[in-house]
Each structure stands twice: as C-alpha cells, then as structure tokens.
View 1 (cartoon, helix red, strand yellow):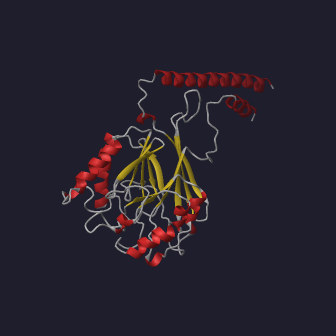
View 2 (cartoon, rainbow, N blue to C red):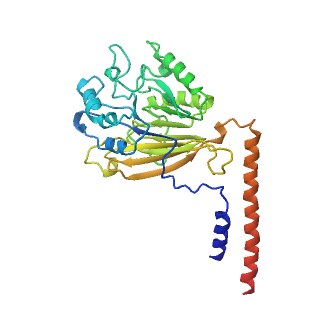
View 3 (cartoon, rainbow, N blue to C red):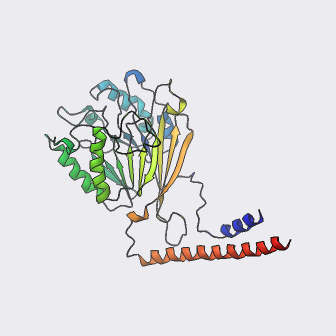
Length: 346
C-alpha cells in the first residue's frame, strides 16, 4: 500500500501521460450510419438519426444500403431524403453517401440516388474529400462491375474507379480513411458466424484490391457496413471498423434497434507538449438509439505511417522523454530499496 502511494506520487509529478477521459470533442467529428434500409417491412422511422443531431458532427456518412429494395423505388428515396434525413438537413449537417448493394449501381438509366442534392459531388459512386488534414476515400464495391476479379469491365468503370481511388490515396494528409459498404476483413474469432462469410467471392475480391492498397498506401482505417454487426479492431497499424445497423426490427434486442458510430479525430500536438499521443489519436464510440454509449475506444496514430526520418528535433524530443521516464524509474527503484529496509527493520 505504501509502495503504491509513493509510485503514484512520482508518476503524478510528470506531464508525460495524457490523463484525458476522452469524453470531449476532437478537432474533427463525423458520424457514420449504415444500413438504414428505408422502406419495406422495416418501416421508415429511425430514432438514431435524432441522436446524431444531439452530437453535432461536422458531417455524416451513410455507409450504404440507404433504402430497402433494390434502389429503383423512387418512393423510398423520397422518404429517405425528405423524412428520415430531415433532422440532419434542418440542422445543416452535410450528408455524404456510400453506395450499397440495395442502392443500385451506376448504370444507364442513371440510378435514383443521382437525383438527390447531396452535399458533395458523388460522381459514379466513388469520390474523395479532405477535411482537417483527413483524407476520406469513398469506394463503391457492392456490384459485379466494381473490381476486375472476374475480368468483367464492360463500361470501363473498374479501371476508372481504381485510377481515381489510387490517385486519392496518394494525397499527403495526416490521416487516410477508406470507406465502403462491403468490407474485406473482420475478427472471425470474435464473430465466427455472420450473415456473410469472409471467404465469399465478393469478400475475396475486395481483399485482393484492399491487400494491394495496404502494401502501396498508408491507410489508417477501413470503415464498412453491410454485416449489420459491430467489429472494431487494430491490426498491423490499421484500424478496421464495421458499422452496426442504424435500424433493426423492434423484435430484436435493444442493442440491435439502431446504432450510430461516432469518430472524433484529434490532431497532433506541438513538439513542446509531452503526451502519450504526440501524433494524434482517434476515438471511436458506438451509441444506441436511446443515446447510450456502449463502446468507446481510443487508437493512436500509427507512427510507421509517418515520415519522421529527417525530423531530428522530433527524434531528440522522443529520446528526452524516454530519458525522463528512465530517471523516474530509477527514483522508484531507490524508494523501493529504502522501503524494503524500513519494512525489514520493523
């Protein structure tokens, strides 16, 4: 007990560790809603949308399957835009879509989602944008013409999207996030049984292109939906975040009745500040339709994705911090020796 108190006193005297509770707002906040499925038997009311407004994000991403049927029902799109998303629009929150397998591909005749006045030019379903030194690369990977896994590219869309996405992935920003409807990976140990198999042909196809991009580009995070499940984990320097469904029938357990995922991005700090997160960090929270936060985790920026080889001042700063820690450790060891003498002589 006495030893623990001495150690706490020593550690409390240094400002190296950031003691933040991570309950604040990042330099950039965005929220992702997935699988709204407006229309059909699931109805149209999505209470989780109102919870989005309560958290005042800089923008919202809809990560696919915005409507219920196959994307060719105009009524469903009208309800989505004029009813379901109205709370966001009334509060001037920008909305950026991702095309899912229920939303119809870009073909002739043009899909109905092209008629919506999105807050960004969505092109043929793939596009990119940069906000607060964060690069968002949106890909469309829900239809057979997406990747060239089966040598099928009658419209040239595969070639066009790969060229566009790879150009965007080369942007020089601090963070790079890749967003799609269908993912490519998830924790199969934690989620051995899902609606879809990780060895399904479309997932294998996604893995081929994503694996290639992981070797060529520094991708900090993959964001995807489709599975109607939550799965966030960190592997080989990249974060993988599966977004839970924004709505499921009320016969489902409460935690499945609609969730949002909120991302707070914290920028790097100045070299004069000593913190456990000198290169910035990302906080991810899953929040249910009643506003309850049931998942909260923090991920550091992967230092291997940074070019600091020529930054001698930064390297010297890190060495100084390490030296300071070693000094504190030596002081604790001396205290422990003194305490052992006191206890032994008692």
